[in-house]
Image 1 (spheres, helix red, strand yellow):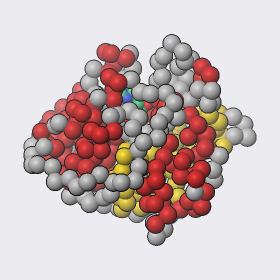
Image 2 (image 1 turned 60 degrees about the vertical axis):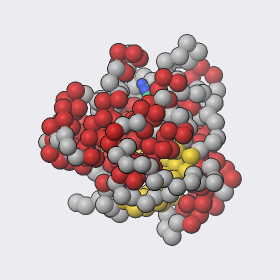
Image 3 (image 1 turned 90 degrees about the horizontal axis):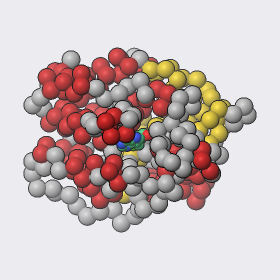
Length: 314
Ligand code: AGV
Ligand code: CA
């Protein structure tokens, strides 16, 4: 069954798997990518915007981009945020002088509002970083709710441990929610349908050496080489943090092409915005209905990545 065509606005935060997600989106023939917003969360915004535009240029996509300025309450570690600098310097993205025009005059939250207001039909908002820009749009332009057919969000940890490991936190939160818990609250308070990919499923799709070697077998094509290089940037995460780097965002993105990779349940959710559990998304009877991915066919996901980005690596 071919996936259904969608108009998509992508809001990402510049980490290697966000960039892998962007690369996937450029390969999806059924996706009409209307705009890419960069949230300055798990990245340095300048390099993250630059690498975003280089990826769109490499793949021949003429898509408007914007960079965010709204701050989150809980900053990401600088050691993670610098990855966008490394990605921006990869040889495959620097084969020619950048012919990159002036930056958008509007910050991402205002630009997102314009993209939503001007869309001829409702769009899917794919968010692989915090929901800050979207929450701002809903708060300041409530009429935009009807312009959104679905929010597809990587975030949360329902029945598994979170990935925020800090002395002042109980470890129950996932980072995209933790960066700006109020934004998730604002989106939950709206009527837009939310499909969420929590750590419960993304934990099952770690970046592995097998996956890296599959990209090696396909070496020699710019898109596949970029994907393999982005994966290589993630190695060492387990050794430095105790937690594996997973295909958090690319699993979420693959839903647009192969929605059957995960199985879903409607879960009534709440989000904790203060205190030692801030950023935790939990089940609560009577809470906001969220369509949550609960199981994943990991083999099928890895095959999808390779089929889409490096078919010779199969
Ligand atoms: O919590 C997962 C989110 C995903 O959107 N990000 C990374 C992905 O882009 C934050 C994150 C959690 N652990 C990390 C993260 C790590 N070890 N390194 C970098 N980012
Ligand atoms: Ca991300």
